[in-house]
Image (tube, rainbow over all chains, first blue to last red; front, side):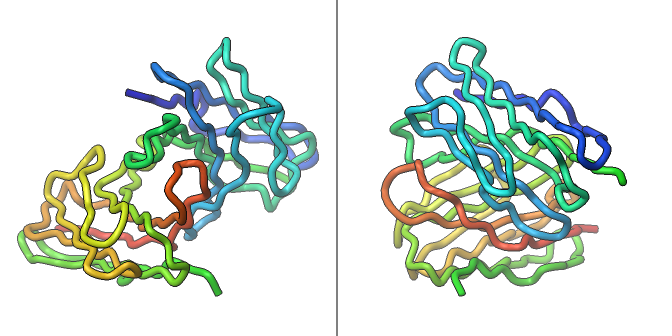
Length: 115
Length: 114
């Protein structure tokens, strides 16, 4: 069975500062990795995903994430955040070949950007 | 506009009173799924459907039922709601046969069971 741990439940940061949201996963097989963002009172939207190839993945809104297989991590980063980035961010994994029980989500990290 | 539509968005009900949360998608997606979101637990899958008349349990199916009679609709049924089913519910869909694609989410249905 797979599991996802997001190490920080809340991350406060000042506008224009860099940010890293941490994600570690556990699985006995190879996985696909995703980051979703949830703005207040909305559903989740895909930020980026890692399927294969380059371990550095770029997504929307200037976010990027790096897959580290040896550390089983998929941390999300942005070099300079904006107020509009305030949202909850979810890391998710799915086991390759398992089309049914598609995604296992972490507990979420609330990013709070202050002016 | 491509979207997943859930209704109702907000509902307060009492223990034992049957309710249905509807979900409809207009993207001709084969795969649909229901999740519940609780603080600190992220999203947990309740049920999913790979296609019409094909449904299966997710991680937390107890107390819920689903049906998939048409491709576009995937209602979530609570036959006898209990307070521990108070939660935020999301329906999602995805096209294709592989689990590499993006899930499209509805805006959520906030359910309170008194």
